[in-house]
Length: 216
Image 1 (spheres, rainbow, N blue to C red):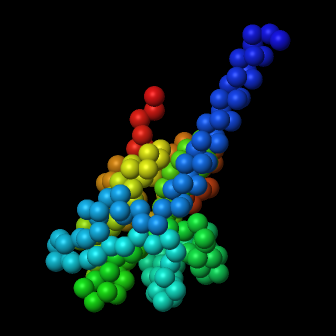
Image 2 (image 1 turned 90 degrees about the vertical axis):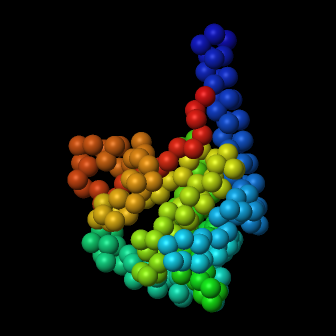
């Protein structure tokens, strides 16, 4: 066996081992009952006139499923209709997927006022917390709560030693793009416009991420 073939086989074995390690890492993350226990400073937001408690949940509470879906619909339906099209069944299934994890924000009357839907995922040799939704009731927007919830996911991700936080964002979502830019997110190499630059204007969305682990 030539040295070149041996090196190639060794590289394949190393990559396979890395993939297995990262998949096992995600599996352990998914077993966590309360990720906020890793970052307890994110259990309460008391700022800009808001007094909000935050809880980590491994599924959307049944009593708040309709509220969460209606909040997404209220905040996002128009943007979906301008891009991929609004599919309520698909969005509801996404919300109720067994991989979905949540941070719910509650007011002083213990009523939900916003949430983050995220998942622990692995692909392209990257472990990540993938943000599916950050949604707030209108009167709770623009007061730092969205930033606080996103930072909570970032710090959880950092504590778990995952590679990054990632999200998909519609180009039509000007407010959302400004928010993530302010939070120092950048376009990921797998974003459609970077994968297919000659046809970048044909794509309605981009993939943004914030790396949290320095590559060695």
